[in-house]
Structure formats: structure tokens, C-alpha cells
Length: 277
Image (cartoon, rainbow, N blue to C red; front, side, top):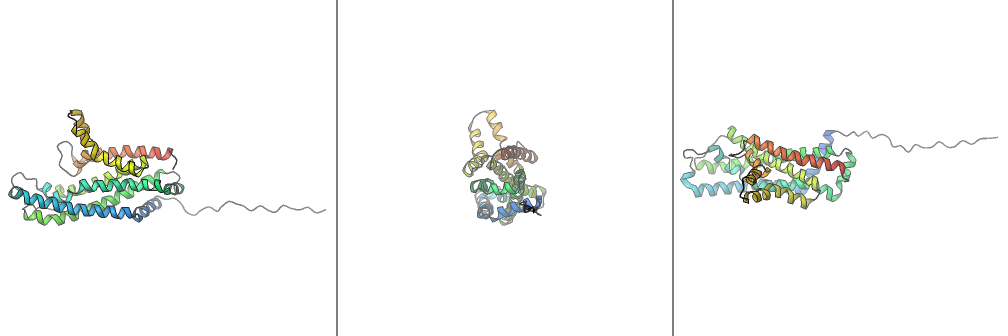
């Protein structure tokens, strides 16, 4: 009598992947995503063009229109005048970086790529932190380079009007760095809003509305409480980082901007963990 033995079953378990999730890997992935988008290249090119073109326009018009009164008379704020052209385009540059900040996150939701990102990073939140870090640092570097070039391009015009200042003067250099920081923070705030709404159109409308429209609306209301609220909005308080303000010091404006970003990112992180991709 013979007995038959059942054939051994083949294991269907896949071998363990040698790939391990690391902070550097997530950051590298987000960097590849950011630089591979055509919208990123165009947005940063526009920021550069705006800083230089608007700086030249503002300084040229100001010098030609004000004439002798602009030539460093008594009480003239030389550092403020020296950084006039370099930071004149920031108000328009924040529009561009805000739009790009929303696109960085909303674009993945609209194309469905966010599912692949979350599949690779199941905890999800490291994706958000990496996007903030990569986008924030890149925007700051691009903005600072653009602002410095605008400073050097407009400096000869100011010099002819007897407005000269040392770039390494803290009152000059810190304003230029602050302007670049404000642009980076504005973009990060917009990224947080985009992560909350997950809609390109809605995110752009909300971000630009918060930075530009809402302060104007509160400014039109003739009441003290309205003026106080307007002062604490990011579009107003944040400018104290690189401009002289009668209300806030630069560090107070920075803290207010960071507070707005913290609220937006906290809400985005909570929703990102609870909602389906």
C-alpha cells in the first residue's frame, strides 16, 4: 500500500523590500515633484521678473517725480530708501508664490497622484512636512536672489540721487532677507490652505482673499475693532517683517505670520489624517 504525499505549497509571501522610508527620501521625492512641474519654473521666473521690473519702475518714477526732495534731505530714512526698489515687487510676488503654494498640494489631489504619495508614506503627515520644507526653502532662496539682484540693478539710480547704503548694513540686509522670508511664509500659508480645501480654484481664491481682499474689506469699516482685526491679518502684519511699521516690530510680524501658518497647517494635518485621499 502506497501513500501519496501532497505537494508542498509554494509561499506567496513577497520578500521584504530592502527600501526603507527615510526623511531624506521623502524630501528628495518632494523636490523632484516640485522642480519637475512647469508651473514651478514659470512661477519663479515671474517672481524674478516682477522684482526687477517693478523695482526699476518704482525707483525711476520716484526719483524723477520727487527731484531734489528725494536727495537724502534731513530726516531721510536712507536704509528704507535704499531697499525701496528691491522690495517694491514683493506685494505682487506674493500673489505668484501663493498660487504656486496652492498648486503644490492641490495639483496632486486633482490628478490623483496623492494616493501614490500616501501609499509610499502611509503616515501621510511626513508628506505634508516635506512639502512645506522643500517649497518654503526653495521659495526663500529664489526670492532672496531676486531681491538682491533687484537691489543691485536699482542701486545706480538711487546712487545718482545721493541715496547710498551698504548692503551689509543690518538695517538694509535684514530688510531684504525679511522680504524674502515674507514671500516664503506667504507661500507656505497658501500651501496649508490648499491642503485644507484640496481644490485649486478654491485654494487660490481663499489664499489671495485672506492676503489681499479681507484686509481691504475690514479697512473700509469705520470702526476701531475693524482696524484692529485688519492689522492682525497676515497680509498686513507680515509686511512688518521687511517694512517699517507703526504697529508691530519685525519680530512681532514674524510671530503673527507663523501663528497663521500654524493654524492652517494644524487644520490641514488633522483633515489629511481623517479624510480619504
